[in-house]
Length: 404
Image (cartoon, rainbow, N blue to C red; front, side):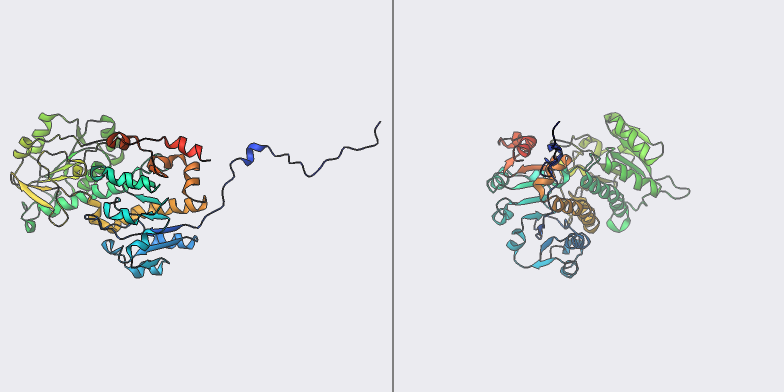
């Protein structure tokens, strides 16, 4: 029998290797740039002073161009007090490795973009040009479209917030243009005792339609909603909590209802391409003189045949004596509320990116964020864009996996 005892050496590690494969990286200090938007009608800003304060307290740096928040009534002083650095040269805001914008990248921005930059901004498919994409690809940019960003529940938080604002705003706008002072019909939107309620027709039972219906019902109007998805109509009734007049889009029924309404709202959405036109010129011509059409779908072409794009400066035109309000980007008219909604989504995202050691690590750990990325280090990862502009498509999941 041996005299030696077994020796256990401390140099051995008994931990299984799998446990050490994906170690959470150390945090990283981010430098975030916010330029002043020069794009058409853009008053919003993607981070509010409150959002900036939280980022600065978490050790990140925020560089903001002079007067960037003016459209949303935030002053340079507000941002400076929150800890941001105010710069007066446009290119200085663009020198930050992470760029946050509330309007899409436009041609004037291209010379300022840096190599390997991360750009978080909206992506407006209707105005996107292939030259912008190819230039961003050359600069090996990672671009995130914030309206395509998904959260843990697989919903689109920024789109939802903007749709809620647009839906609620629609009835405020309708009330304004039905009043006599705007050469309207002189009708009070809603209902008072002894007088039949104002009749509101809503095309589309998505978020915009739901919030427009909610606001109209709260004012006491009579609301009728059209949509070709019975599921969406059911969901709208459930979330509003009462039985409502609903119908699928059938031209005969729609024409009859439009003929007797005071307010018609176009809130149909389209996932790819143009919104379908469901209200023809003939239907509009038979509407009551002085009634109003608000086409929220104008961002994607509009669902009334008579709709034409208008601006916040000159928001309406008349056709067949019907007032048409067709301003794209309605939330920009309520810029402060819209800025707060965007900031509430982007600020936690940026903090998470810092905690994870940068965006590359964040998209590895958070799979649901990948839906928002359309360029990854210069590679085009959005299939629809590659088809539309005939550019090379790369699968994002394979790209991320190959870089680990």
